[in-house]
Length: 176
Image 1 (cartoon, rainbow, N blue to C red):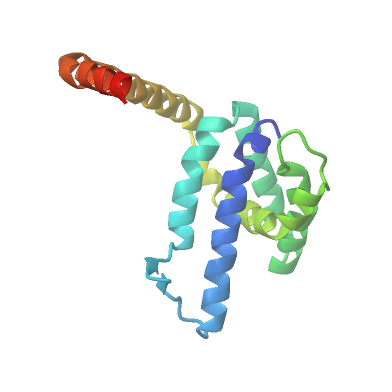
Image 2: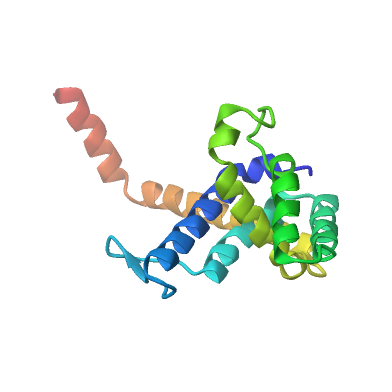
C-alpha cells in the first residue's frame, strides 16, 4: 500500500501505546490504569484519533480504499482468532520501514506494535477513510502549510520591529 512507509514511525508508536494500554489493563485485572509515571494514559480511541490525521494526510486515495477493502475482507473471517491471524499475515506487508526490506531487523523488532496498530486501523477503517477523507487530508496539509507560513511571517515581522536587539547582539558579539 503506497505511503504506509511514510507513516511507519507513527504507526509503530501507536501500536506501542496500544500494547502498553493492554499490558496495564492486564496487570490491573481488567481495570484500565489511568496514569503511568504521572502521565495520563491514552485510550484506544484517543490513540486512533491521533493516528487518523497522519493516515489521511499521508496516504493516497487508492491506498485508503485498499485499507477499507482489507477491513471488509477481514470481517469475512468467522472468528476473532481468524481475524487476528489475517492481520498477522498482512500487517508485515502493509507497514514496513521506509527504504527497507520487509523483514529487516528494525521491522522484526517492531512487528508486535505494527500488528496491534494495523488491527486498530482495520477496525476503524470505515470511519477514518469515510467519504471525503482524501479532501479532508489535503485541506489539513494546506492549513498546516498556511499556519507555518503565518508563523514564519510573524517571526520575521518581530525581528524587523526590534532592530535594537539585532544590532545590540551584533555589536556585543563583536566585542567579546
